[in-house]
Image 1 (cartoon, rainbow over the protein chains, first blue to last red):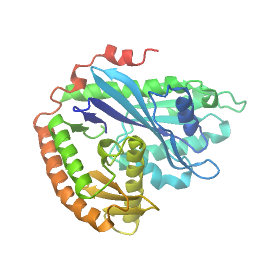
Image 2 (image 1 turned 180 degrees about the horizontal axis):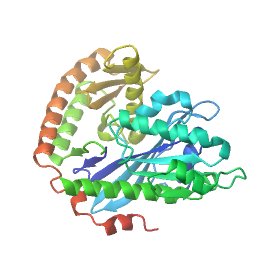
Image 3 (image 1 turned 90 degrees about the vertical axis):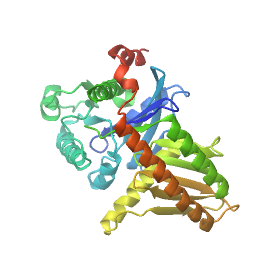
Length: 198
Length: 161
């Protein structure tokens, strides 16, 4: 759910990075934070355990620029990927405008990917969203690892509706910004469409 | 699709700012701010210069969301008031009209009792403003929405390196 403020001329949108534990969601945000210039980013907040596993969420506010005199701001969140944090994941999806699914390409994590995407569908539904309609992109992360699964196989399993997808290596920043741009664009186009309908 | 956007017009924004200003003075608070339940900062008043209000807004909403989850687990609808006591500063958080979150940061110059009293009064005023705002948005949906006019090119331009 976006927030349009006519007084301060701002548009705020919420993007959530979803996916299995240790898949690279936080690494995506960390890379974006490291590369953005200080005047366009806010603080990166990580609510993590002592072993740097996400406990509740990571949060990074970004300012992308102006559209027709409105400042566009994106708030990026990650969810905790570990299975038992489901209650927290559900809360973070509240008010989401677009979802990035960060899949772990390692062949032994395929079950975890499938479980996470099924969990995403359920949690979206419980928040009143339809997975089929929400702006959505996939990043197949860790493509540089020798045990990476076949790309086409991952597509068939995780991306049946052929959403925009990217082969990434988040630790090196590969496809991190492409992924962010893609989801931001879809969210804005979607907002444009819904404004036209009304 | 994603529920209706929260839309804020200048008139209501000014009214909200006035209400927050009044609360800051009457409650002897340091900072008062208003956050949407999804973590978007709506307005802030007081000594906000050295404070990262965006992060505060996001964490407040996360806090309220987590406490709301706790409430449901024990069969409560919600916990409408949260209070965090620090060595110097304290934070009083309350849910207004089930939609927005009012946060008051105060120190020894005020007291929990005073803050609670003033927040209660402010809640009614904010509720009235938001009720008017929602009616207005329903009546003139997307009047002059920046989105009804933007082109694909505008969106592309945003991503030019």
